[in-house]
Image (cartoon, rainbow, N blue to C red):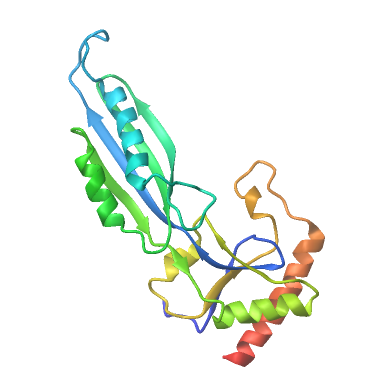
Length: 212
């Protein structure tokens, strides 16, 4: 689609926050097979090899891993299934800006122990400067409605990651609500914050249109 003049990503982060960036995402698939044998045979079974690969992957990401830190990589074992003859892993890696996904994939293939490593998807991290016109418009709107703007970065991934490599336009993310409740059973939003978010967004869009 044609690039817009500017872009506001709708994402819950709190009515007084403006989001400058998100970690990237590397989805890794791993499959390994081993010949059928008795369970007491002292050879690695497929399920055991897969568990070993998971620990090797964590070490490949580096000694410092933290889902809560924007500048550090982290991984989640999203799925595991297997038996002595075949095993599969589904791994979700979150990575900071500038992370070399190809280098990680190359190292993991060296650690595959006869298994197959597949990069299912790679979405780079993104971070916008505070001088970005969308960031400045949202920041000014938050102040106008009595808030203290809190520029922030998030350790998840959003639509901003998807469009940023293709649309070189001003952008940021904004939205009322508690982002820590995303995908949780008790996900909800307070009506007062929702209405305040509408006011901020309305003001920000007017100011952004005038600025552009």
